[in-house]
Length: 150
Image 1 (cartoon, one colour):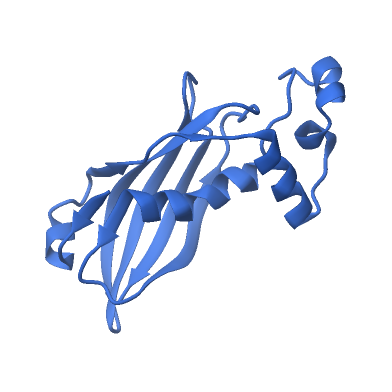
Image 2 (cartoon, rainbow, N blue to C red; image 1 turned 180 degrees about the vertical axis):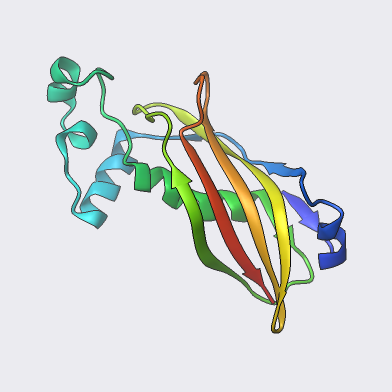
């Protein structure tokens, strides 16, 4: 966990990688729970037997949106803005899923601060988030995350 004392300290971090999260294993249980929560039970995520015979990955893969949804928790475990009274997820500018996340993979995020814009009562932060899979050649998710801090 990296503590950032103030917004002025963050300004010195512009354009830099600020944090790298711990690895997180993507289990079949997590994939199944996400499928249940979103009603997305496509066979490439939940049908182990069919994946072994028909999928090019030979195993279930995580939903892209499951991977994306991990960003909030990863962010919270990687860094803390000490002086902020409230931090909100404001949205995303761009998201891509360049590579799959097969079940049993471990993923982590790299967080780079790209932009700080003043807003009423605080600042909007744009983060470049790259989620990588352990041993993978390409990232599994690349996103521009907008956070508002007050």
